[in-house]
Image (cartoon, rainbow over all chains, first blue to last red; front, side, top):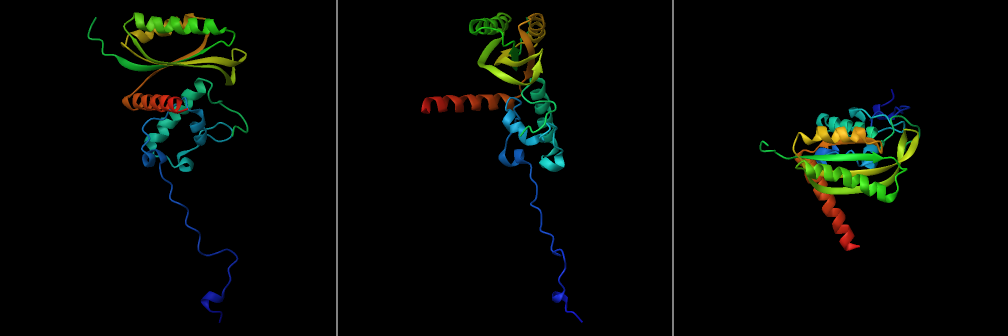
Length: 88
Length: 120
């Protein structure tokens, strides 16, 4: 009878543990999301210019809202496009 | 006038790129004088100058950006907005109220900027 460790599975049984997401604002102690800093806001926007959800960015609710407000202000002032392709 | 508690605001304006250099300065002066006249106080002005827009506004793809931070009584903003809407050089404008974190952020950024300038 094949012993337990003889069996070779196609995929590894031990799924590698994904790094725990953290809110970068809490970690770095950033208190204000500046809408003028388009480069920084591009981290929270996908390459079509759409805002990334919290489960991707890993932000806490409070700072995800601040980022959302900042992105909308930047879009209003033409620092960020509303919709585009290959933004990055 | 009641004790006008000054709130800190940040104004960002996009002027039409057609403006020449001195018209651009004149437009800036016009609005900063308007703020000073009505009891406001300009803390900082930062003209970014000609920049390309992320999308065309009024069929133009570039604009003259001007960011300024100021303290003003609360009733000044309505007057400012009125002037902005009337002025046809202004393509787009936005006034933001700054909370204490935002003011601290701008201050820190300015000091860091001047430190770099001094260092270089």
